[in-house]
Image 1 (cartoon, rainbow, N blue to C red):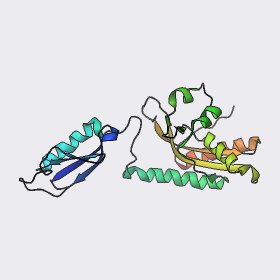
Image 2: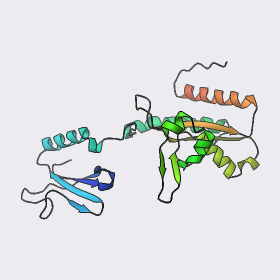
Image 3: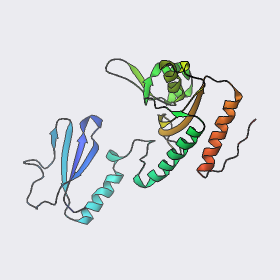
Image 4: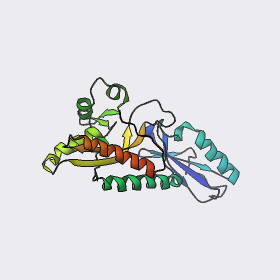
Length: 232
């Protein structure tokens, strides 16, 4: 927290976005930032630039300007989960874990990206999710992947791929993790968002639907969220 040098480290391959900020001890006024060059230097793909702060006021002004600068802003539609918010997330995760297990669901984690074909076949090529909302990219090897916009397709793929149809049925799975959709960011709607869900595979009884409704109702109640469940 003392005045001194602040070293900005930029990545030239991400449009010079600040990737790290390091602080050095206070320096004497006659010490140059870099030998023969105070503007900065390259080391591989990283660019190092130092700024000397002579006072606490200077430090405050610098970091205030950093907050307003586009070079260090979050990507649109994303947000940080700060340490003081983690207690709420832990409460949520603990609640869904305990109640999911109580209803016989086991956790499954699938990759954050899958072959694009998985979503085009399961969701439908002409849907808004496929046409407008998916983050799709092609690898150097030519494979086309997409960040998952939802998890049902991934869970169904895992169910088939790992032979879960040979297990005693039904197979009851739950998941929680980040999903990605390219939407117009607004309050309560993010391009990277966390989703919890359950899937019951190998059973067509309406009793399963009733259990899922009851499970979610209990989760809301445990979290102190008042909901009214209506079945048409």
